[in-house]
Length: 425
Image (cartoon, rainbow, N blue to C red; front, side, top):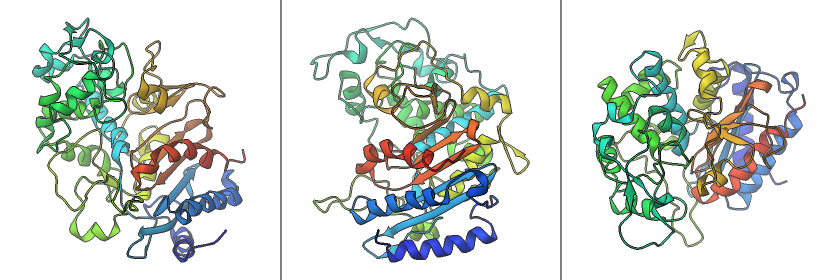
């Protein structure tokens, strides 16, 4: 397969970096000694390079750690194709929904401090949700149903646990089929860029739930609501809490909501669509005060490798403990049980063989899913194409960084295959 100048240059630079210690400070390791095929890792890069050559991606970074060492961290393609700027392994990428696991860990540090309890009603912290009602029909009725949404009182309150596992009855209005409740989110201006998280969550509190709490898994704005709870409890802005509890202790210096002017040249840029327009993307040149739990963070592959290493270490990395081991065990355990995920988002993002924990999807069984993986593995992805998986049984974690929203469905199907075909034991 044709090798681009960018790929060759980055492979050479990465080889030198690996010899001296990987970016991000994790120790380097030999793939074959760690039970990972070097040939298959190169095969991953050939596939990603093919995506670049086909014009689907500007570039990609792939990293894999096993048994406490980074055995692979390489980039292919361009940080900015129009400028012919090659992609480096420490390039910055909008994380989109890969913000959620970081936000969930931040929230769980307050649970460990006894400041939040998972069974607490949401209204204990955000009184605006005391009067919320649920749609009588799931999602408020069929897509395109005219007229107001018929509602009923809640059978039980929304809990903090519901927010972490997407069972609060909230939805994401700008994704999937536009049902009446999702349309209400759009009409209320939830997605018109608010100045603060409080402004967004106040709007959500005026809207009906799509389901009674605890009755369905549906991808939602719930981690934004959770982040607002964290702000109220801590008395600090959510970005400050994330920095103090997660990114700071883990030395994830590249992971932030606002990218400095000095770091703007490190941000990976998407390719234009066939019509010449850019796909929807996060404009990192703008400064925001809207610090979400659902999305908004920008980070690098080396930083996310550190985050995953902490999770593999059951809450600790480099002798720094972020969470207790039991807390991580709880987060990576299925929290749904009999609660179905037969919603449109559940079928698409989870599917057979998967449940959901407190911040991550969780693989429940071997063989049921069409995706490769191991029972007990957990992870998530972001709309711009970033993906990660942590596999405790194999003592392995992997991350893929891209910035191309219109390729998300393709990458979602491809990622686990890329990762697991590299394993030799």
